[in-house]
Amino acid sequence: MRKILAAGNWKMNNTPSQAAAMINELKEKTKGCKNDVLICPTFVCLPDAIKAAEGSNIKIGAQNMHFEDKGAFTGEVSAAMLKELGVEYVIIGHSERREYFAETDDTVNAKIIQALKYDLIPVVCCGESLKQREDGITFDFIRSQIKIAFRGISKEDAVKIVVAYEPIWAIGTGKVATTEQAQEVCAAIRACIGEIYDEATAAAIRIQYGGSVNAGNAAELFTQADIDGGLVGGASLKADFGKIVNYK
Ligand code: PGA
Image (cartoon, rainbow, N blue to C red; front, side):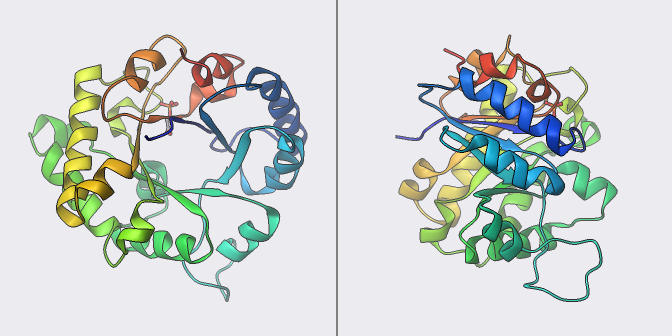
C-alpha cells in the first residue's frame, strides 16, 4: 500500500528563522497525521528546519544537489553534505531548474543515481509545457523524461524514488490540471515504469501531482488511483498547508 506524500517546495522563500517558525506551526497541525509530510526549504534553511522538525513526523528535503561527490563546482552542494545534516529527500529536475539552470534529462539521471548512492530519496520532477500539451505530445515527452531519469537504476533502487508529475503550465499559475488530466498522466507514468521494470515495481512507486495544488483541490487529486500526494509550491507557504497535509 502506497503512503500519501504531501510535500512543500518552498523554492527561494523564507529565511532560516522564518523556516523554523513555519515548521513549528506545521508541527502542531501534523500531529497524528497518517500521511508522510515533507518540507523542502533552501539549502541555508536546512539546519534550522531539521532542528525545528525534530520529534515530529515532518521530513526535510533539499531542492537540488550536485551529481559529483565533491570538487571545483562553485556554488553547488553535494549529497554527502545533505546527508550529514540529516536531510532525507531531495527534489531533482524541477522544471524551474530545467528552465533557468539548464538541467537536462541526463543531469537529472546522474543526480538520481548520486542521491540513491547516499541514501537520499529523490523526488523526480517531470512535466510537459503548454505547447507540448497543445501539440499532443504530452505522453511521448513524459515517457522520454521518465525513461532517461530511470536509466541504469536497479529495480531495488527504483522503488525508493518518488516521481512528481508537474505540468509546467500549472505551476504557480493557479491553473490546476483537471483531476482527469492529472490522473491519466500519473497512470501513464506508472505504466511506463511497469514497462521498464515490472508490475510490482510500478505498483510500489509513489507518484505525486504538482501544479497549483491548494486546500480546496488536494483531496480530489490525492484520492485518484495513481496519485499518491502532491508537490506543493505556493500553498505550502501558507497556513493552509496544514489542511492539504490532513486532506481527508
Ligand atoms: P505551485 O508550485 O504549487 O506554486 O504551482 C508547484 C511546484 O513548482 O512544485
